[in-house]
Amino acid sequence: MALKVGDVAPDFELPAVEDGTNVQVRLSDYRGKKNVVIGFHPLDWTPTCREQVPAFNLDLPKFTALNAQVLDISVDSVYSHKAWQKYELGAIKYPMCADFFPHGAVTEKYGIMRAEPPLNGLSERAVFIVGKDGKIKFAKVYPLDQPPSTEELLTELKKLQ
Image (tube, rainbow, N blue to C red; front, top):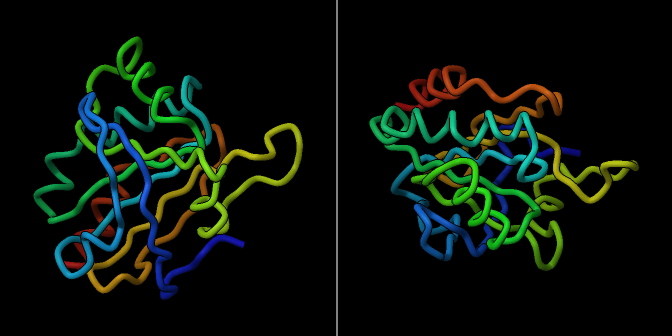
């Protein structure tokens, strides 16, 4: 079951790629400093994910203006993220985190790991907004073929100002 508004967001530390560079991301590093928008996408190289990731990148200045950090998470490896950026997406200016090993551990903590074939082992398409206090302020699971609306998320962030 997916985490809901009011739950404490599980901390995590994951390897990531940001603008072509390998980085380590720890959710707790933002506590007390920024709200965090965590977008989960099921799998690199897929059509709807190809819409979701660049849309967040395009609106990154709007998220930044609202003192929010955007993070992306999927069960793909850092190497898949790098190749996807290099050959298809272009530079993504926010961390694309790899919940690769142990496979889907963070996805499991957030309650959005798909268990039914044929897509078992992938995350749902979901977004969580974690407030500066470490609690979930917004949580939504989207249909796999529907990218999240960045405008909806920006509206939710404005409520936290």
